[in-house]
Length: 106
Image (cartoon, rainbow, N blue to C red; front, top):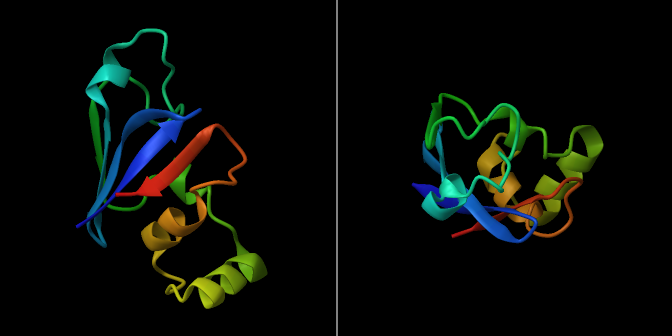
């Protein structure tokens, strides 16, 4: 099982885990979940429940990945299989993301 910490503007928001290639879990951090001033990290992962489960990488996280030639170059240089979306996410979403969310391997 691989895990990654999910941060929103530098604040721990939750944990993303890959139990298998077909089982992903995102769970909000207890403190983040209980703080009414902290927003959900995405519209597809609202703070209405603490844990979410999916058979594929959640679209919010998948959309943080590059596509096409950029993805091929990243995978080549990082030596990551192009089908390993979780591994690629952990490798590239640590620093330079478009939004307020970053992902760091645990």
